[in-house]
Amino acid sequence: MPVLPRPRGPVSSDVLDVLAGRRAAADLPRRPEVHQLDPFGEDLQLALYCLYELHYRSFDGVADDLEWDPDLLRLRADLEAPFLDAVRARVAGGDDVEAAIDGLLVEPTEGTGPSWHLARDGERWQLDEYVAHRSIYHLKEADPQAWVIPRLDGVHGRAKASLMTVEHDEFGAGRADRVHARIYTEMMTGLGLDTSYGAYLDVAPAPTLATVNIMSLFGLHRRWRGASVGQFALIEITSPPGAARLVSAIERLGLPTEVTDFYAEHVEADAVHEQLVRRELVAGLLEREPELAADVVLGIQASTLLEDDLADYLVRSWSAGESSLRAPALPAAA
Image (cartoon, rainbow, N blue to C red; front, side, top):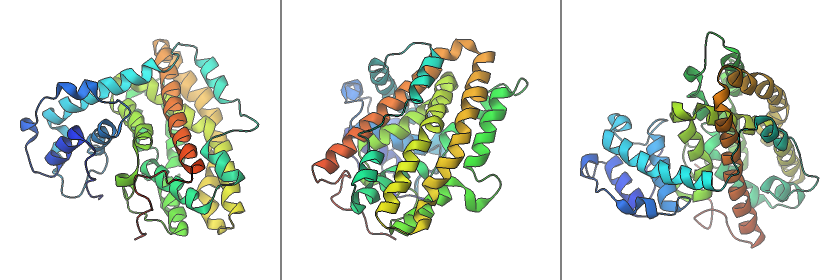
């Protein structure tokens, strides 16, 4: 289990004090300034991440019953509202799901994101940083989307069956050695990185946390089941081209072939998943619940926005010759 990170402001300090047992959740002050925090900033995003983590594997030494503590849940809701409001204010919205998905299928001939940068001329330390950033999600890959499973119609189960097919692959299709989170740790081992769950949380900046927090927010709320499906569709549709570029980057840097396994797997598997999520998952959901179209679009747009924010942050840092992590160097590998 991961250790608790260091706080990044008053709200994350309050949360971490409760999780560490230094104060009771009922004694937390009500902070009206929560709604004045930067919704994409370090304090709010870390506090939200730590509260969501209680629903995953939690942290070393944290009491299990805090997962459903009403005061922490109330605080979490207070943090979710400005985050989601800020995201929605920056996206176009609408309910044209077909147009939103068609936009994901347009691949630029020359892009500016981190996979393009790494494939062209990225350095080894930049690849290491990228993998450290992404470990925040990939070591629990597909877990946030699993929450939507019981919220889909199981009688007319077209959407549920297709989601389960994709999730089955994400969790190794019955083979423990092919669970995607495990393949990611093997890549990290090949790069000499720390494979411990949550090892890089303390150095992961707010843009990284936001990309994972939006998945948890959508996944944990039945209200946002359509957005969770849209977000999952985004991942599966856009993954193969980026994964192919990362394979090229790893090969260009002369790293062992086993380091490419994770991204090579996603080039092949997600090309199949793309068709499945478009034709069965999204279409099946909207066949039963057409009123969720705007939420599906929101899920696509929200994750696109936050992924673009992270991409811009990474490339801007690297182009300036600076580390993209909150510490100047990666923690030593375990």
